Image (cartoon, rainbow, N blue to C red):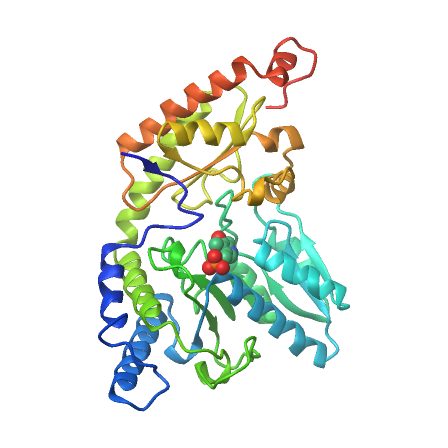
Length: 395
Ligand SMILES: *Cc1c(COP(=O)(O)O)cnc(C)c1O
C-alpha cells in the first residue's frame, strides 16, 4: 500500500463527496440559471450547498461566491480591493513574503500597475509579527492580505489579531485560507475576516471548485465577465456537481475536525521527533503554531528531489518545498524567507498527512526517510565536504 503524504498539494475526494456529486452529473444535470425543472432542481442544490458551506465558516449564504478554486478567489479578492482602493487614491497593500504564488504573482502584477506592496518578514518561525504589521499600515493602505496557513511549512498566522487591527483601521483584510478551511477551526466573524479564499480539492472535494467569502458590505468586482451568475460577481455556469461535493466534503471535515486534527497532531509530532534523530536536520516553521498535517524538514547535504524520487520508489508520495513546478532550480521562496540558505533549502522535504493517516504510516515514513537520507549522503560530495570540515555544517 502506497502512503500518500502530499495532501497540501491535493487530497483524495472523500467517499461522501463523490457520492454527493454523482446525481448532479447525470440525473440533476440542469443549468441553475434555466427555468426548466432540471434547472430549478440544480438551482436548489446549488443554494443548499451555498448555505451549508457558509455555515461551516460562520458566514451567511449571500457572502459566498463560487469560483474555480483558490487561485481565482485570491486573484478576485486582491484585484477588487486594489481597484476599490485606487478609486479613493489608496494604492498601498500589506502582505508577507511566504504567500502562495496566486497571491504573490497578483501583487507583482499590481506593483507593475503602480501599487506599492509591503512584504512583511516572517522571521525564523515563519510567522508574521502583528506589531510589524501595525507599523506597516498607512493612510493609503487599501488591503492587507495574509494567509491563514502556509502550504509549505504549515505555519498558522495570527489571523484573528491581524483582522482585529485591520477592522479597527477600516482596512479590508483578505486571507488565503486554502490550507486552513476544513483542517483547523475557521470562523469569519471571530477571525475578523473580510474576504477569504478556499478550495475544495484541499479538503476532500473536487479540483476546479472553490469559493470566495466576501463579508456583507465589502465590495468585490467581477473577475470573469459574462452572465449574471453569483449575483453578477462571477459569470459562468456553476459547477453544480463540484459545488455539491465541496459542501459534502467540508461538512464532513468540519464534523470530524476534532478527531482528525487531534490524531494528525500526534502523528505529526511523532514524525518530527523521528526526523529530528537524523543528524544535521531541522524542522521548518513553528513547532506548535502549525497545521496538524504538516511536517517540513531540511536535511543538510542532500538534494530534496533525489530524496523525493527515492521515497516515491519506496511507496511514499511527498513533496519538496512547494510542488517544485517544472523542476525549477530556485529553492522555495518560503524556505528562503525563514532564513534557510540555498544549499540547505534544497534539501527539503514536506510531508502532509491525509485524514486517514495512522501510526504505522508515520513510522514507515520515519524509517524510509532516515534510510534514504543516509543512503544519499553516502555518495554526496557536499556531504563529504561537510564531514571533512572543508565546509561548515549549518544545521
Ligand atoms: C492550493 C493552494 C492555492 C491554489 O488553489 P487552487 O484551487 O489549486 O487554485 C492557493 N493558496 C494556497 C495556500 C494553496 O495551498
